[in-house]
Amino acid sequence: MPTVVITAVSRGLGRAMSMGFAEAGCTVIGCSRSAAELAELQTAVGKPHRFDVVDVAVDTDVADWSQEILSLYPAPDILVNNAAVINANASLWEISAEQFDRLTTVNINGTANAIRHFVPAMIDQRSGVIVNFSSGWGRSVSAQVAPYCASKWAVEGLTQALAEELPAGMAAVPLNPGVINTRMLQSCFGSGAEIYASASEWAK
Ligand SMILES: NC(=O)c1ccc[n+]([C@@H]2O[C@H](COP(=O)([O-])OP(=O)(O)OC[C@H]3O[C@@H](n4cnc5c(N)ncnc54)[C@H](OP(=O)(O)O)[C@@H]3O)[C@@H](O)[C@H]2O)c1
Image 1 (tube, rainbow, N blue to C red):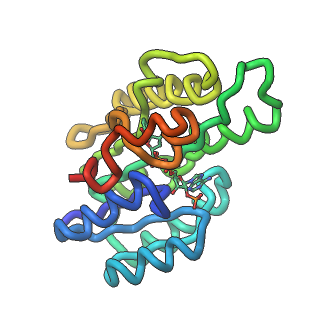
Image 2: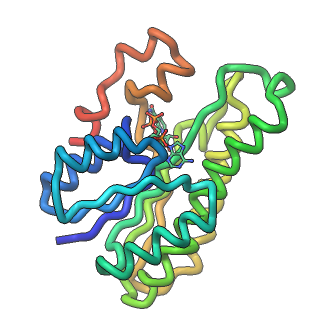
Image 3: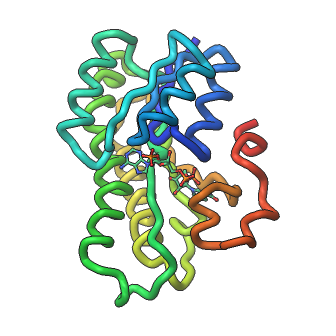
């Protein structure tokens, strides 16, 4: 059964995908920053699945994590770059340089970091799919979320260029998951998020 590496599995879409892939018989490898939530997920799905505390924004931490994972598991059949953060609703000029840098470092650099450290092993086996989570806001825009829009437009471009670099037998796709009631959606839609599907409904 496929081995699936997913970034950002402590809650939201990443956690729901982890549960769904595990139930489907895949081996799921995941990361996030919150140790308690990862321990709870590990208890829920058991072995051979594995979840580690890793901040995808830190290239050296992703390098160490991938080295450990690739010494224990086969190269991933599917790499899901799901990790992202959104800015608190604000106009672009109100967002500090530190907040802007942190968002782009997680959403863009974090995606590139996981690609840098997992894709060479996938290329060695000349198979696999890289799924980079984009957004409707990677193809359109709204006020108050300019840094997030910029990061998801970047993910779209990065992924299309990556797809041209991969050997035959591999693929890279940017995925817009739709609109799902997670903490991220609640940040930008407030109570308006309640009308949308839950992450577990979406994952099916
Ligand atoms: N929900 C929607 O409607 C929607 C729509 C379009 C696109 N998306 C995209 O779907 C993906 C998942 O979003 P979501 O709605 O599930 O968001 P969410 O509920 O806010 O969850 C975000 C996840 O990212 C993790 N994370 C954040 N920074 C990280 C870092 N530096 N390193 C590792 N993990 C990190 C968080 O865990 P920790 O805090 O524990 O690290 C958490 O597990 C994102 O790429 C988002 O842009 C969502």
